Image (tube, rainbow, N blue to C red; front, side):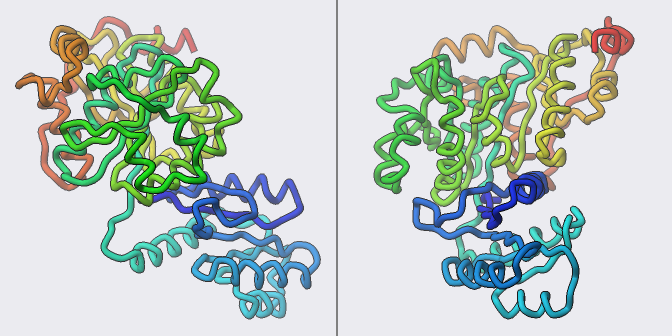
Amino acid sequence: MAQLVGLIVSENEGFKKQVDRLLRSGPIPVGVTDERIARDGTAPDIVVVDVCGDASSAMSNIERMRGAAPHAGIFAIAQTADPDLILQSMRAGANEFFTWPPIEETFQNAVRRLAARRESTQGARPPATTLVFFGSKGGAGTTTLGVNCAVEVARLSKRSAIILDLKPGLGEVALFLGIRPRFTVLDAVDNLHRLDREFLKELVVKHKSGLDILAGSDQFDRPGAQDAGAFEELFRLLTRQYDYIIIDAGSQINSCTVAALYAADQMFLVANPDVPSVRNAQRLLERVRQLGACGERVRVMLNRAAEPFPIPPKQIESALGHPIHHMFPSDYKTVSTAMNSGVPLSLAGNSDIATQFDAFTRRLLDPTAEVPGAAITKKGLLGLDRIASLW
């Protein structure tokens, strides 16, 4: 689903902070922008107006936003459910009315209704899907999984797809795909004011699978905290031009990766079956919860899984409190050969791991499809006691 754009109209910082969390934390992705029409000329999808203070000013704000964004859903939030205030808000243009603080389930249900209406009136183009790959540690195989998934998505879906590399200085997406990019993600975020379809074509490299590639920065200090807002807007722009957006977010939590996380329809947390990786995965899952991102979007991926498992998958699931979504086998020779040649696994010949990517991607594109699952068997060498002792 394409990320919705949210806008908060209030002078109260506490109100803004709590509503920001509500918008970002639900199962429907909502990015929050400042009080203006976005630079690409599109209006917000959701406007939340503070009606807790002066009613006259609040009604003016609702009317103003209804005029500026006629198709947006406007949510009014007041201290009490006063019948006259509800009527005034609806007459001014509000679609939903809540009392402060809003009940989270009620608020998210309103977002769902709005998203459903938006999809039904969006026309023939299906909503974009954003997939973010994040590693529990460096070297977990995040880029390997992200790149090969992106190639398979483009190949199997026959729809428009792009992969972005968010890692500053050391991004490897272009290298894994055997290309020499002229431009990077920084050229996109530094030129948002003119980032239309034609300009974007100049920035990306087209892979023979059909996948577009927006390469990683060659600067070690960018993307940084100063770029987070620009990346939020870039993600929104891309959802209007692509069917699938795949993001290699690396293994560091920073402002830009958090922006990617909020934009994600699904976040794939890549871990290995070893103690440091599992410990980090548990911490990252907790951090995701602290950030308010919806846990329903998170999928744990176990990479380099081979029997005998150092830690059995069932014990990993118990330690994480989260199911393993998919397991990829350990096949160093095949993966390293493909990586060194710049050829994706699916195009490098038949192998067990290539079959796993095919099965994983088919399941991703059609969750109802029947594909072979990864077996979880045999007790490994290290137990849960060892994991728990290191937390």
